Length: 225
Image 1 (cartoon, rainbow, N blue to C red):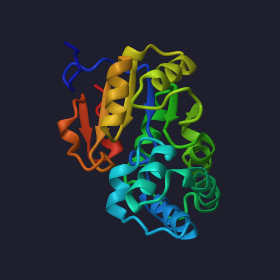
Image 2 (image 1 turned 180 degrees about the vertical axis):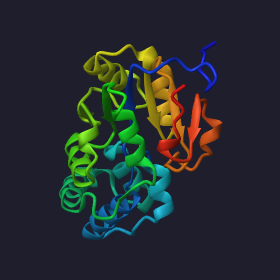
Image 3 (image 1 turned 135 degrees about the vertical axis):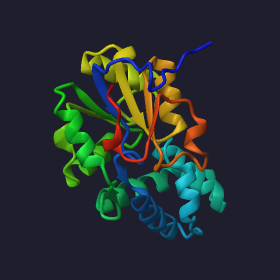
Image 4 (image 1 turned 30 degrees about the vertical axis):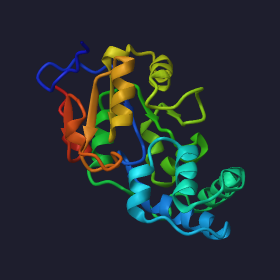
């Protein structure tokens, strides 16, 4: 039986890994705007915001395939859709997104501890780095890794284990802060304590049903002891 720490018995942190979409930045507007343009250019019906919110988090490839399936797009449209998605996302990245309340304050507090920090997302790495830079959040991280930096994506534990290696930290002492069951599954499998925010994108499911040591309404509410 696996053991997931609670706030009362959480191990002291040696390093922090933070998710991006739904954890640091509300990027749903970016996804919706990009997908509207991609589907329109392909002559396909649009997907609504609620569908996108439930579908994001497993990587751009999964998002595009899910959208094509939802609107009746042929599978052989995927390569064209992927090319358009990259083009549109590069152009719109950050324009329809906002940093969540409490994130800057929370990151400043974590950075002041002097511990190594990484941002780990399933978003393509170039888009992640550009978004963090545009929003002024890149200064808080020693490393930024995206979904194309490793052979597998979250919820596989590999990205977390590789990120711990880069941070020089033990998984058992590296806190994963995210917004979804994806983050939690990866963290549990990697042996990392997990903290979940309540305001992100958890595929339409209640976040408190996912085991975690803490649940936060704002990042600056993180309890460190």
